[in-house]
Length: 53
Image 1 (cartoon, rainbow, N blue to C red):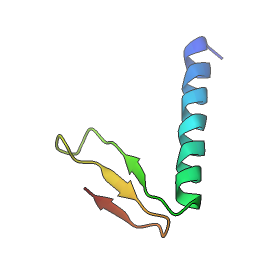
Image 2: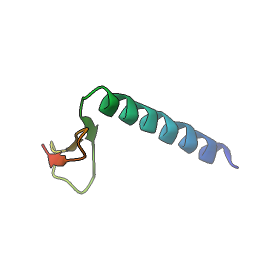
Image 3: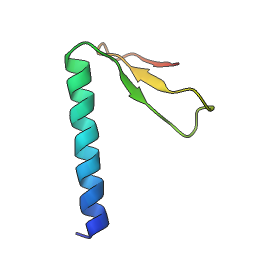
Image 4: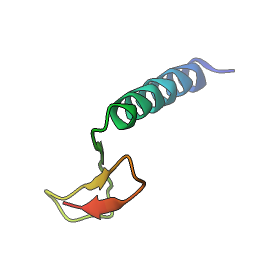
C-alpha cells in the first residue's frame, strides 16, 4: 500500500468516525459536494433524511 493510500484510509476512517459520532448524538452531519452550487451542502440527519441547505 502506498503512502497516499495509507493517508486516504486514515482520512476516510476519521470522517466515518465523526459522522457516526454526530449522528449518534442526534446532530446532523454536513456533506460538501462539488456538484452543488457554491454555498450549498447536504445535511444528513439521524433519521436518515438528507437535505440540501
